[in-house]
Image 1: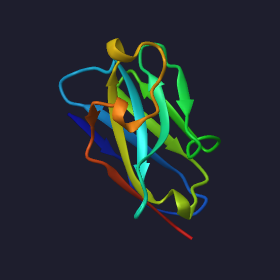
Image 2 (image 1 turned 90 degrees about the vertical axis):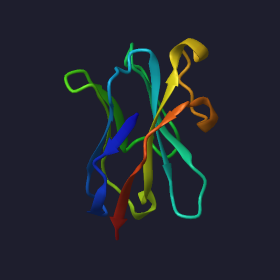
Image 3 (image 1 turned 60 degrees about the vertical axis):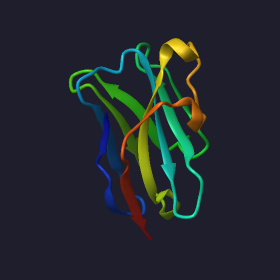
Length: 126
């Protein structure tokens, strides 16, 4: 089970750091990803990370201002979001995709991820 946290209300230009934790297991056998869904829009890929190597990839929404990383101490997947804009307002979800079925390519499609957290709401005010 994945648990996302760290969302909240922030002014435009501010920063937030989201975290995703898994109860009872590690992420070493998974690709991990962050997605977001804004009101009235489809869920979109923000960023993904291959836990074992630390390599990362970003979607259009995550490129430039967001940084995905892993915390080996706390065994969490993090998303640092800087210079937030009102259009970043969305529910942010973390997800996991089994490495053994996808190989080394970090997936960016929603259907490729098998496990999902409950989401954490990020609201950016103008």
